[in-house]
Amino acid sequence: MEIMRVVDELVCTRRVPGLQLCALRILKSPQGAISVATDPVGALIGNWVFVSAGSAARLAMKDATILTDLTICGIIDSWEEAG
Image (tube, rainbow, N blue to C red; front, side):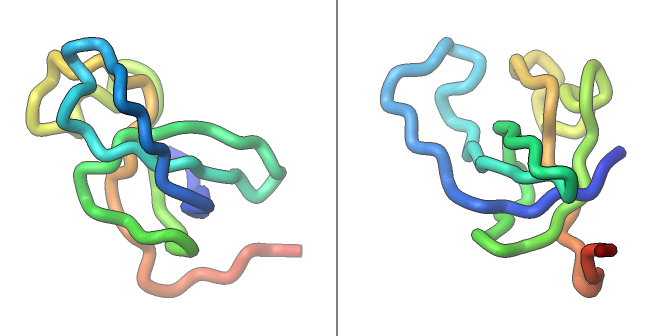
């Protein structure tokens, strides 16, 4: 798992069937890498979150057939970025 920050929502009107109903968020790692994740927990812009990647990301969704390799698993209540 990794800690990342939600920087924006991602709006896509055309998606593959396995992603049609999933909320998507743009995330930024503390190192500055940008990623897209499915969001089953309702994270808001600015929230720090922890994510699962790879095959574990699918298991974090209600439906394990959803095509994702990065899923937000929780919103962090309190955390300060080192640096």
